[in-house]
Image (cartoon, rainbow, N blue to C red; front, side, top):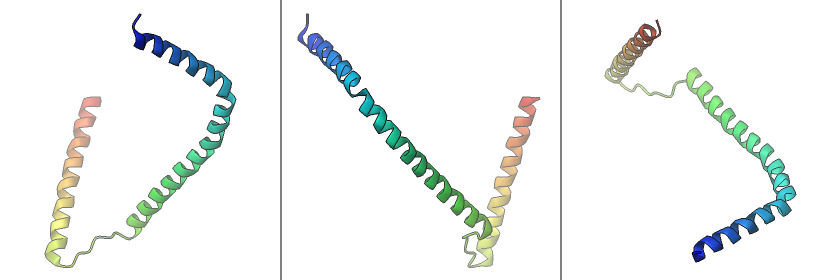
Length: 95
């Protein structure tokens, strides 16, 4: 038998034995980290929601010149037209 196969099987066996011995500690670790993961996820979601709310109430675009404002309006109209075309294509495909 190849040496690496023997070493791999022995290592696998030792790993399974240690997992069985330390399984209780592993569960304690999962129990401890799961609430922390929920807290971190909730904090990130709250932050993203807060910034989205702030951006909707007070857009951060600075229109320093009328030409710039007109350019942004033209881009917005072009994007809206593309969105409407995509909606029509999706509607036609679903019917």
